[in-house]
Length: 118
Image (tube, rainbow, N blue to C red):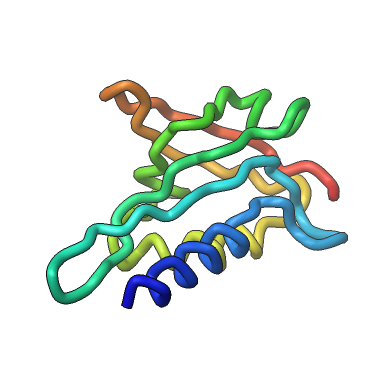
């Protein structure tokens, strides 16, 4: 079970890189999914920004490592809905506006960024 959870975390971390493939939008940040564990299972809990690339749309918008993404384009990003983040971010095209609400030092902060070209 422990090995499975580590593998799941590693896959989620790799899949969460916000640099999209060529021809898609680029935001320039990476996230980590945290798990809420119980004696019987582990469930996705939160999405935490781990890295913001220099001179990226995310950096210009003010996103910071340690920010917890709570809302993305009006949708809740927590628990099971956190899985939708990869799909939504993968669909971002250059020029798209991405709005999110993050939790930073106990306060909610609104972030808006325009995806750049990859």
